[in-house]
Length: 283
Image (cartoon, rainbow, N blue to C red):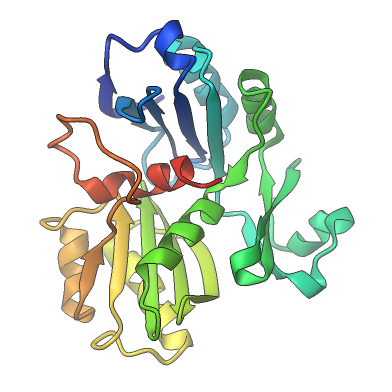
């Protein structure tokens, strides 16, 4: 089922300490991650899994989630606060003037594979729009069972809010987040969101194509407009080296100021956790 990428757990984290702490969870079509803090805000647990290799179609999401929820005792602790986000590629931005909460499926006509979906939306007042998404009903059902007091958001909502704080005030900015073989891309103009999309990619050259397509769509010069990257990409990887050949300035995303990694995860860089920590800091 899964490949465990990282596993940190402070043995002192139990039902008593969890009652004053918080849990942030990211449930994706390609993986799962969690971050727990104690009452003082210090990191108590940080874990991540990948579900499957490139080409995974997400049909076993419910099975994978049940295995994780059934085997991970941290998910049953009584945390004071729980935040969780859903991630898949089926999300679209709708301007405020065009949004109708009673007709969410209409925004996905001809865009989704044939299946049953649970439709949800997040409000993005910073961008004068709504983010509408279609989720696997089984995934929503499982999360609702374990987190009955919570309401999910889509990962794009958390990322867009965090990215906005990283891009230039008076210039364009391009951002990309990688989870397994999926990339989320956003373009900002003076912190105004003008593009969000997500793509599957099998090879580094495919990733390069999708990122340069975002530059081309707005006639941005890769030699002048910086790219901020986060997620599963490292500076010595083939993927990064290819991007670096075509984009002059590439910056790794920094974690939100109020978040902190536990001591010890030297094998994974800070920007690897940017999406999860964005969920943890999204209200």
